[in-house]
Length: 287
Image: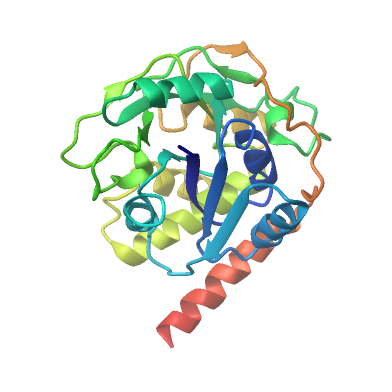
């Protein structure tokens, strides 16, 4: 029985190579849906595939937020016979391959595993382009504690994945505290600026009341009024991302063999590429 990772990504060229290389240490296969990236994400996925890694990708460039529906279709369709791990581009499994295999072998239904959020600090080695070796401090605890859902092959299909892949609709999942996911949502000033600005604008296109994604809208307004965060402000953003407040950080580097990257570039042009791509797409969709 294969263990397959499924992911929907967009504009993640600073982290996608590390994510693929790391997670394929414990997964048998990783399938990525590119949601219309305008940076180098797709080129990196193609290069990793050509290198011979067990990764496949497809493109779905819908402007709307498609993650839950696309993942549900994959879980119920081509990967219905597999054990499935749902991963975002900034998420890294914290386990050995035998630990993940044992989890699925024992599971009798869907399982949730907890997030561990890593936070950038001003004393991180800024010349290291690999986010999982550069950012080595994590929050001591999560408040609130978010989790991601794993779907064993024994779970009858069809199922419906919830937004954020935190669970399945109408099916209770059992918490598994041993296997965890390292989460790297905030990595550089330009990365988080592009993420929250474009994310806020996308949500505003769907809902002008801005009831959805309050935190993203607040961060976007902060960036628009104050400019790019410096490294100290970046740490504060990372420590409060999807959290009720900051907590103490502990030094706990992610254990990984994915330390050397071949296709990731240290470049500030990701921001302008993604901003220009978003504007072009909106103009095209509205014309």
